[in-house]
Length: 472
Image (cartoon, rainbow, N blue to C red; front, side, top):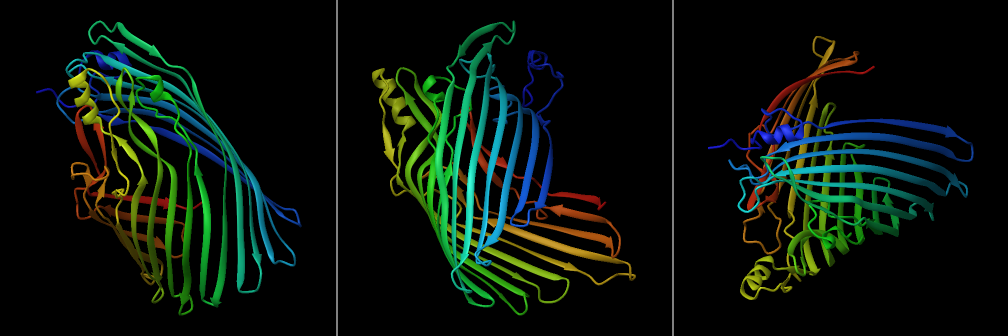
């Protein structure tokens, strides 16, 4: 039996890595931030500059089989530069609080994905997929908060963003695994996606009493369009998908009691999505079905949230968050890949056959819980403190396919973490011992497909460690 992972001797030599390599991640990321502030008298000026770079090298056994049926070596490079400039101040006898500014974001990304299909029936080759994705975003925004009365505040926000993305040099190459000769190549046309959209917010806050506030707001949000950056098979697959936008409605309250020892916040929301971006399949005439992002015309999510934070006495902090939500597709026609394949096998022709998911549950986790408790002791030996901390999280079951049969279900899971920190009362250092997933639960965080294998991506097992910190 072959070991799982890319193991054919030619593969590492072809990629320039060790023949003894095993599935692993070797990613590196670094960045720098520069903030500047200046008081202009009539306003406050703030600038935020940032640059980040990432190098990706990932050697992956996608289907965890003993055969080379979709093993991958993923490489890529990305650098991101962003610049924000904002002015803020008060006006109209301090009744109007305002913020105005601009934001620029520039991304340069390239990727190369190698796949080893040498044990997959009908695909005795290495495949290399390459692409370059430059993008830039320029936004202008203004936020206003006006005190109509001492207790009643009006809120207004508006943002315009221009997002320009491109999908360049997209190509697929295949190589003979023995001779390493190129046996197939296809270069696709360049594509672009431009998003020019407004987003914003209108809201109202009412201070019912000194320690309780009610609020309501309506917001419009936008997610730019983009491209399906996986292994491209046809020009239609490389074409971009449309922007996603939503109208969000929310009402809630915020409150504090017992001299800030107890805080209770709650909210109810309704999010109406338009052209929601969803990974599915499309039918290409003369070719067949291929994976691609599509736009769901209409869908919605509604739910409620409650958070409680308490400080009963000095040193003790307890928090608890509860969330419940439901999601439904209002207008969604999904390509039935199995029916399309069966029709082609019978007639030799491709025909679009869809299933209606109108009214179908999205399958998102309905109940989520998380909480924490922290206690800092009084000084030990008059010089040191000990902080005990614990937290938990619960996520309900999630079905990644609407109206699924359970095949793609992510089961509910419960996790616990804890730590102990020892530090001096007047010192700058601290020593911490910690443990994550204390109960060593097996759980799945997501699912994916490779060739014909449906895989669950498992979460991390129990991990025990320590860290040392020092504040300069």
